[in-house]
Image (cartoon, rainbow, N blue to C red):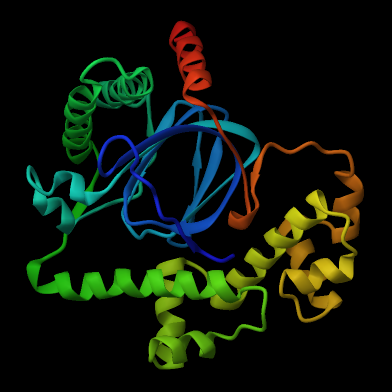
Length: 309
């Protein structure tokens, strides 16, 4: 599943979602929401726009709607994720639709403004998870304050009105490309297939893909297929040949070369190394290694974190 489009349900507060997750890996994906990720424990690498950003403990970053991104860690990292749709601000600050934030890593050690935002994110999490009377009002106020502070802290670009149509078309294309790869990564898949589907020239799409996803289509697809194969190696007893076919590789030689490039060993060596590994609950359809924490467990961890702080 390549650069998956994530549909975020907003169950309790309209256009807003918050959760704590222990994460090893999250495949490349996009969604229509802003996302703030706060690393409470551990460290991760953020891959976006062709760049890799190291995000240490007690740091946070914000992503734009429709910004392709991937998260990975060598060991489980505890992350607080806050996802807010631009529609949340439609009445109070509709111009946020034209704001594109820069990718920056902010550390709690960086400044008073960073420490204040860090504290506000924790307050939002506790208020949301505790769900005391009228917590929706409290959370809405905190969310607005957080984004107000973010716009003072984080660099951003305002998209001119004359470019809005082009920007929205770009977002639509990113989503359609994501959806198509998501549906066909396990089959023979050429960039020309996507170009035909989107009615674009192959030359244009090749440059569009590299500019927006940060990597060539072939390298990207090989990475996605290798991750699918890795999941199957760990979670099934399928033969290497069957795994190669299920992940969309055309032959075993291509499978071995792509896998070794991604993980530093052959599929056979990887399976032997992790033969007895116990992974957290998976979202297999998302090619993801992450474990979402319940609200009760989240509150306990937040309490421990605040005591530690």
